[in-house]
Amino acid sequence: VQLQASGGGAVPAGGSLGLSCKVSRDITSIGVMRWYRQAPGKQRELVALISTVGLTNYKQYPDSVRGRFTISRDSVLNTVDLHMSSLKAEDTAVYYCNAYFQDQNYWGQGTQVTVSS
Image (cartoon, one colour):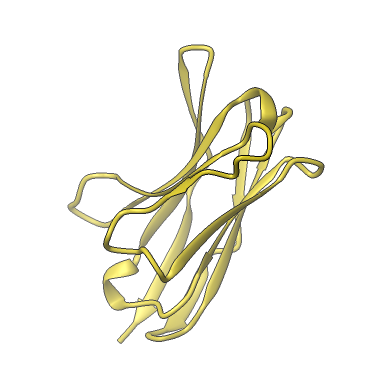
C-alpha cells in the first residue's frame, strides 16, 4: 500500500487548510484510514480516523481537534482528506496519513503544516 499526502503549507492562526492522501489501492479493502501528526519533540498523535467500508462513514477525533477538523473519504478516487479550520499554533506539525492493512502499518511521507500566531 502506498500513501501520497499533499496539501500542507503555512497559514495564520484561525485559518483553514486541507490535506489529501491518495491511496494506491481500493480504500474499502483497508477498513479504517487515519491521519496522525507529529510536532517537534512530541510523540505522534492520532487526529482523525474514518471507516472506509460500506456506508457507515464512522469518524473519530480527539478532543484537541474535534469540531475543527473533518475527515472524509472518496471511495472512487481512493483518497482520504482532512479539512482543518480554526487552526491554532499548536496544530503545527508534520501530518501523516496511515493505513493498517494485512498486519502491516503503512505511512505517507508526511506533509508540513505550520500555523503562525
